Image (cartoon, rainbow, N blue to C red; front, side, top):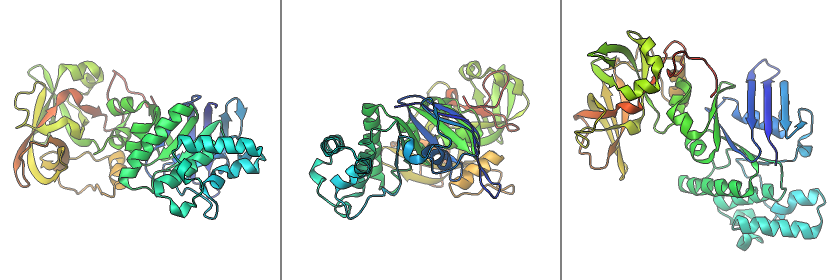
Length: 405
């Protein structure tokens, strides 16, 4: 096991495209680090540089105390698990797991011991004599994991290993990988586009955008205190609702005024974000997570709530909850970051879009709202997020500085 350190790492291709820029990240010995971000953000390129599959244009990459910039992939003592499993179809499960050890001329007895040990950990013992075609997708992924485990490397590198699995199996397998990593204690770098995977698996998560690191933190910190608009909008499912608002003082309190909607900013929020006082009379971007919006009819007397009024356009009943899609008279946030986030999910945010915002709220299953209704939604004002529309930075302390936290 070993720490992995990116020191001012950059990757520039011959055509001049800069895929990774000034990348600084220290992954601790035994840590499970997730790199997450939209397609094309540079996360896989960063992983491939650790693996030795991409040359490093500038900067220093260390595995443990050793600089590995020019060390061949085979000599880096890492093991990679790919999206495609990359199993040999003509070999049995046993032979696939043992393949790398045989190449290294490990003694036969030790190979047998390591293979059976990995098979026991991964629940593959009944399948050791089978060929990959006789296995399910989840079993094939476990074979790929077994091939990595038996090498006892300093670090595991995983490139979207669950993307070929169906939804139910993906949930089961990510739990298995997390459990396995914690039991082995091997430094792991895991790349994914799926921020739910990132939040549930990583000790820390590194969010990337356009080749640059945006924020590195624990999953809960990313959720509670995103450093900027991009992180706030990318982390969370469904995504954070973002609208343009103006901060005004009314009867001694601050209010976020957005179109015809007024949301009181409570003292608890102000104490956590003292920098808001400098934005009195100025525009901000107000962020509200769907889980902080409830059907007001279910919470008529909940303290600390504000009210939004709108029209329900879509009701998704999920059994345990209802995803309520509703429009309000308030302009949506239009910035480079929100446009990129919309594009990442296949939507489009144009300048001539209607001056109303489409919000999503997680309503309780007992809600009786129906499509076409005029609804009242309760917002937990203790959980509001605010961003500076000019810099995109989250508003927290008295002065905002850009950087990963």
